[in-house]
Length: 98
Image 1: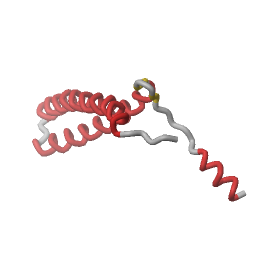
Image 2: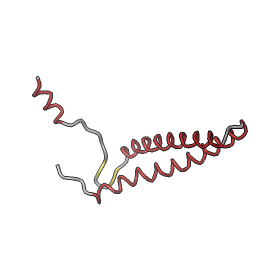
Image 3: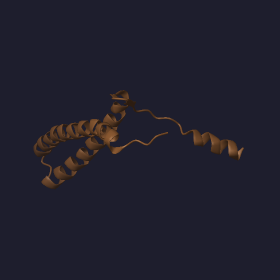
Image 4: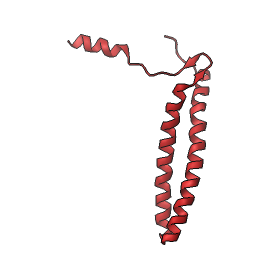
């Protein structure tokens, strides 16, 4: 099995990363606006709004990252397609223990 080079992996990483960054930015802007608006109407302190906004931003970033990581598994990259395979060494270790 030949090793994958940086030149081959960067397009795959970028396909995931730019989607996650844009979704995080848009999601954070939308949710921050809504939290600020609703928090202001309800009389929340600025500190509470900052904390809540940061927590929601973190949640949006994690969700976007995972969502688009899974998304790129359905894409093709020139001569590559990503997949998850169980390591065959796992079976060899089990057989050795039996």
